[in-house]
Image 1: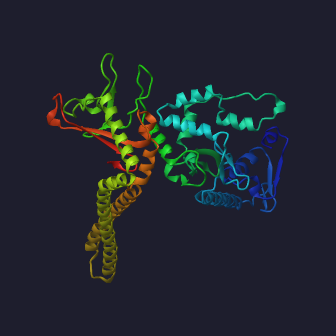
Image 2 (image 1 turned 135 degrees about the vertical axis):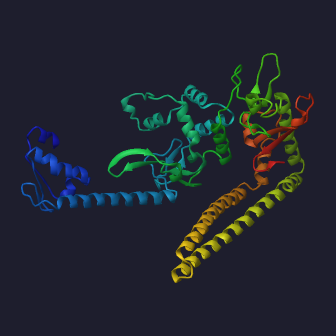
Length: 465
C-alpha cells in the first residue's frame, strides 16, 4: 500500500477502525497526522468516525493510545500464560532438543530419542574424562554423527529429492551448549530468551535469575552426578600435557590448602613430573610455600586411599557406613544446629523491630514522641531491620545449603561399588569420586628435604573421611 501511495496510485485509505491500521500509537499518528496529508491521501476509519477530509479528528490520538494499550495488555496476558505453563514443567519450545522427541500424546512432554541418546551420553562421558569440546566435535565428525540441525533436516528429507547432503559440521561451541543444557539431566529450563517488547519481534537474552527451571520433568539421558561432573570440568579450563596432549587427570581437583590456589603441574624433560603451589610460583616465598610433591607420589596416595575405602565396603559395608557417619555427621549436625539457632534469634529480633516501629508511629501520632525524636528512632530501627533482613536471608541460605549437602553415605557407597577392581586412575574415575584434593605443609619447615605434608581427599557426598 505504501509503495502504491509513493507511486501516486492511491488517494484514499479506508479501514474498519483505527486498530486495523495499527496498534502502535506512535506509527499510527505518524501516518494519519503527517504521512497521509503530505501525500494528499484521505484516511477514513468508519466505526471511529475519523475522516481526514474534515477537521473533527481530535479523538484519533486517544483511540490510538487505547488500541496500543489493548495490544500491550494482550501481550502481558499471553506472556503470563506461557510463564504459568513453564512453571508447571510443560515444554513450550517449537522443537524438541537434540536427543528428545515431543510425546505424541502430549506435545508438552519430552521423551527420549533412542537413536540419538547414546551420542549425547557419549559426549558427557568424554567430557567427564577430560576430553575437550573441540576434540569431541572432531570425534563426532569422524563417526559421521549428524549435527542437531542436520538431524532435523534428515528426518524431514524426502528421498525423492535425492540423497541427503550434510550441511553443517560439528563445532566445539555446539558440543558445549549440549553439555551445558540441564534438559539432559531431566530438567526443563525455559525463558532463557525473551521478546524485547510487544512492539518488536527482536529476541534478546533473559537474565539468568528470570529463567524458569523445573526439575525432574522428563526422563534423563545422563545422571545428575555425571551432569554435575561435566559442569565442573567446563567451569575450569582443563589443562593438557604439552608433550603428549593427554589431560592432566588432577587438573581443577588439586589445591593448596593454605592459600586455596590450584597446584601447578610441571612436566620437564629428564625430571619427574611434579606439582607446586600456584601462588608460590607467582609471588614467591612471602606469599606461600612450595608444597612440592611429585605426580607419582600424589597418584599413589590417592589410588591407595580409594582402594582402602573400596576394600572396606567389600569386606564389611555396615562397618564402612558407621565409620563414615562417626566422622562426618557429628560435625554437620553441630553446624546445622548452630545455623538454625542463629536464624531463629534473627527472626525473633526482626519481629521485635516491627513491633517497635509500629509503637513509635503510634506514639508519634498521639503526641507522646516529638517529630525530631521520632525521626531518630525510626531511622535507627529501619537500619537495624535492614541489617537483620540481610542476616536472615544469609542464614536461610546457609541452612538450606547444609541440608542439601548433608552427608549421603548411601550414594558414596554406591559410587565405590562401581570401582571394586580399581588398579589405575584416570580423569573419569577422579571426577566421579572426588570433589577436590588439598595439600598442606608446615611453613616453618620450608626448605627441609623431608618436610611433613598432609594430603586431604574430599569425596563426593561425604567430604573428607
